[in-house]
Length: 216
Image 1: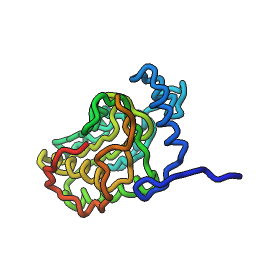
Image 2 (image 1 turned 60 degrees about the vertical axis):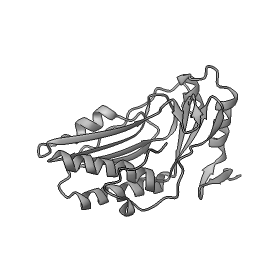
Image 3 (image 1 turned 180 degrees about the vertical axis):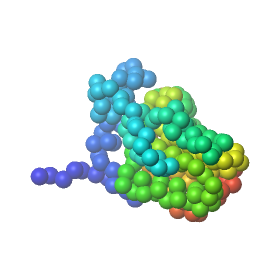
Image 4 (image 1 turned 30 degrees about the vertical axis):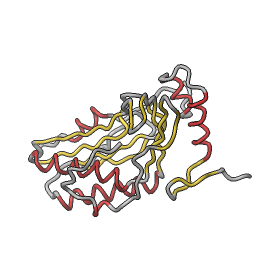
């Protein structure tokens, strides 16, 4: 049996079939922002998009999924009797990127095994830095997403709001800095990898107070 053909992107192996799907988006984008087309390219065809289910117990919810991210459910699941604050961050697909007007869709690829392990490291680091934190949710979407869809959510609950805000900000910054997930963009002028790619780092090296510069 012939092995799956792959290529390397930022040091990780990526199936060439994924790149072929992106090429199809560029060649056959009729209509340009069609959700049906996006689902076809992602391999979901006419199947109904599923929604993730929350863990039955515990205070940590981590995952990489092709399902629609359950933003509302993640918030509700994070509410705890001992916590007076819940902060939720949702990263959504916008219609532009740096130097790229008219963004139509994004495709996210993840090295899933390592991505979930890195997310677990982020969750552990959050609890070391903010010991009173209640629940932590780190979820990232893969596949083709169209404008307005959530690609990543971070939810943190804590007894008081300062810790919840700080920990949630650290959570999304650490996901961007340390989790092996790549973004491919389709815009009016063509398609290519996202412009904000950077070398991955450990969660422990991410600043807890990184006001940060805007990133794509």
